[in-house]
Image (cartoon, rainbow, N blue to C red; front, side, top):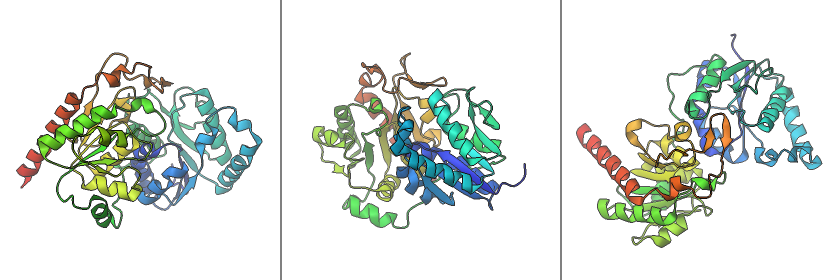
Length: 368
């Protein structure tokens, strides 16, 4: 394969999924340093991808507007689609790296139309049988969880001849992280525990009971004598956590932009949360993580970090995971009972948190 000159990477997804593609983007960037690398992304992930420094241009496109099959036929949506297609056609890409599973017929149809607009001779992507005839560099999709999402993305970049020996997530420090953290945390100088009780807007089925988060927070405040910091947006359940706690907590819900949040996470000593974009941000900055999984696939979306710094907490009942299994979406919103989450006790999470905390403390002391 000759040196590629113009590459389009496609990841129209939430923040966590976009972050999981950064090792593959690094592989493309390092293998083809003189190529123009563009990334097609959702508007709210543009600042994250731009901050990585891996792309020459990040093109925003509101994919969610077209998630319903009927929406694509609405005349008011045609203008935006027409502009996107014209821009893709005029960019003269040599190759497309499609970092998406072809989980539904409608999704495969959308990606095929998008790829066709580029007229790129090389198109690499995951193929579960729906990519025949238009993926010129297909990568076999073994199903969700058979490989981690990072590994799938790296396989797609590898199909375009791109390799890297650094498979870590890319999230460089912001220039003023120290000042941001100091302003937000005020008098908190030593170690602290970060709790995120949200799961993003895609599926609330991943969320855990805020009252149980509060029990965990109080137990750690008692046992470790450390402050608790709550992060997230106003749409998350952090307010319910702080309301149910006996100890005071530093509630930063709705008060942080991306740089603020990264600053607080990078300085923290332990992160506790469910499967979410914030959890993946925590993995990228290197904070030890206790990750709670239920209906979502832990083998596909576990924190991409050294295993000794991560504890996955889940019940492991036979019906879990139920969303994104095989090559199908599955039960995106879980089942009405959600036994995989309701049956999970605070004591299990506290035990995992203390074990990880003590391991990190021992590791730090042994390195001195």
